[in-house]
Amino acid sequence: MNHNFDRAPGAGRSYNLPADPGFGAAGDDDTKPQLFNQRGPLRQPRSVPLFSENNTSPAGDAVGGDCRKQSRPQQSANANSMSSQGCYDVDSLVKSSKLSASAAEFVPSGINSYEDPTHYDDSEGYYGELNLDEMVKDFLDHLSSSPGTFESDIEYITGMLNSCVTTEALLKDLVELIYKESTAIPNFSYTGARLCNHLSKHLNVSPPSGNFRQLLLKRCQTEYQHRDVAVRGEPEIQKKFHSYVLFLGELYLHLEIKSAKGPPKRADILLIALKDLMNSLFSNPVDSNLICAVKLLKLTGSVLDDTWKENGQSHMEELMQRIETVVLDATCSRDVRQMLLKLVELRSSDWGRVRAVSAASNATPDNDPNYFMNEPTFYTEDGTPFTAADPEYAEKYQEILDRQDYFDFYGENGNDLSDIEDEMEPEMEEAFERFCLEAEKKRKK
Image (tube, rainbow, N blue to C red; front, side):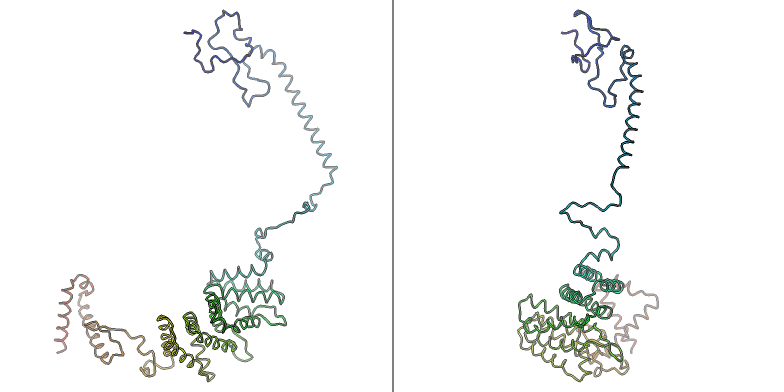
């Protein structure tokens, strides 16, 4: 075994470095090496300067000490001279430069400058960069998702449109956008009609071709002229036409026209259009057309009926007769036929309205169609229902009241019948009711 075997880390490595004078210098080949032979580090530390100051050799200190003492002042002097020379060079460049901080921005040729409008905090500046189409769609999407904010947001929307819509072409584009969105967005016809009514009063632009309301009615007339073709068209065409019909019904209810004397009135031209539209729907009595007609009459039936009666016209009676004919002859589905019958029943009850003209004491089943509407429904012992329309209703109803008084009488003596009923078994409950009936009969005798 080799007696010179060294287990120290890195033992046996040779760096071919000269031995330090301060530690045993290398002698002859027969000289036994020391156990910890002083060697240099594997690599220089990165924080150590170019010339090592941590050399442990005294000879190295003696030899290199003077050099280091002389080199430090010389290096600092060189650094100072270089920094001062650099400062003089920068100052001279600044004084001789023709650049200016207020100069225009340099843009290479062939590159268009672009500004992102979303970086602006001012909403007016943001919408100023958008076109009318995007702005109106943003407004309508907001009103569609948050219809409850209509009253609080309509003034801001009107102000923005007044600042943007200043020409006849822009006004026509606005009318077209609102019409398309009002007939395309589901359940938006009500809010769209309210928006149209407000803009017809507060939009400033009024070109010779017509104001907002006149252009809107012209746009609706264009669709109205194709009604006979639309009711027999493809399902997609019929769907668009039905949306237009319901929007026109909402427009008739909400669009107000100033009158020279008295309060604002509704547009009579829409009244005529709605009658013609319903006739067109009943001319092709398929399920989709009949459902649209039912929705329209539920929406506007009471107003149309009152207006036609005031004008001495019997258009509503004609429509009801036509509905009855459709129910008897048309091949509509059972559900649609039931909807039509319910509509006729609704009209016979004055569209579900309760007139406050006649007092309750004067109301009879003959002069008040809603006489029995709010009366409760009772059931006999065998489960047969009976209401106020039943001839024996008064006698049975009085019997129920007497029983109720009897239960109240027992309740006043401290017996909580509700708790008893919850705890009793079905047999006990039946026996208890028989007992109550017998006691009631004895009390009457």
